[in-house]
Image 1 (cartoon, rainbow, N blue to C red):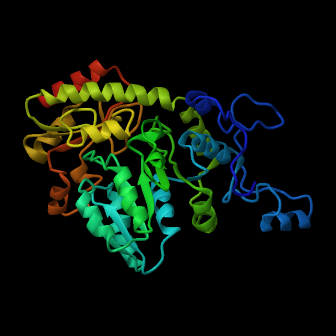
Image 2 (cartoon, rainbow, N blue to C red; image 1 turned 90 degrees about the horizontal axis):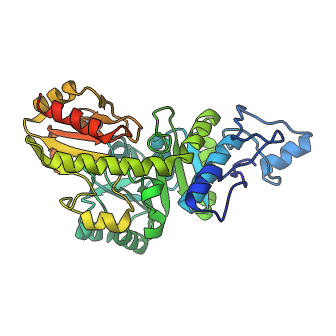
Image 3 (cartoon, rainbow, N blue to C red; image 1 turned 60 degrees about the vertical axis):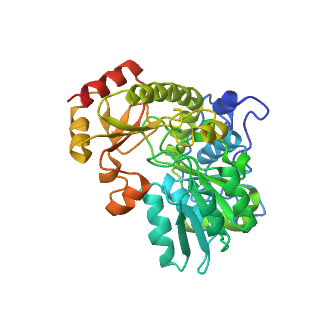
Length: 399
């Protein structure tokens, strides 16, 4: 199967069963765990068979840049979870974002995106796409009138992330989808913070969903990976040829690790949510904390929308401390349990200072517009005992 996913799996079963068995395609050895196919190429019985394979007349693997049995199993399992027609795995989350956008765009096209984006996504939209003659406009993702005004000018593509990184803005996907499709555009949603367990953008009108599988899908800080989920038509018309010839391919070993991650994704995400809610409530009452951003709190500006779109609040809590960068750095240096890292979705609790890491490329006024102050910290709440997490934050806040 050159770039087609494995057809094994547990179709018709419930979500947790599909997370364990979806995409399972055993080899002739009848292994229990999914096989790891570390191969770059495949052999043919005759030149005519190779010719037929490259023409697409025969259903088989051709080259691991196009498709691989282990990668195919991961794609099929995630496809079942997301409930879409096609999944293509990529080497990283950013390669998924770039491929999902560039495969459909050309010079003269117009892209409208929410302003609150992960730093690398913002770089692609605001700086890289214009180099190729693609017009881009950034809007306040929570402002319906801003979307109406921007999309009244027409667009080829709309790109958002919800919840956003790091201020956890929630965007009304159904409303933006309606405006997007009225403008004749393709709606791409980065769903990494919510995970496929907590939010299903396709049900709210998204055309394409992208993930950094490095985050919760792996969930233990081991491998890089990404995924693009879409319709067969989008895949055939745009993504397939781009994917084949630009090579954002996921390695078979990383795909195998991510397959193992999917088996426990539901269980881990639920625990992440419980711990994060407890941490957010704890931080709300701490002296020196001026603001807590978490979709599970009633104080969140889009709390009602978050409950309508998500089945859980997620694993990330952002909060602001008095004293700006100096106080924030003192807190980080005082932590004993929580690690300083720009990753998230890990079993270990991690914290980062967005103004000097993920969003350091932005000018101070641009960060201020996004609500990223020098005192803002982003915590990816892990799977440790939540009392230990809270105690570590308490002693660091008092340092």
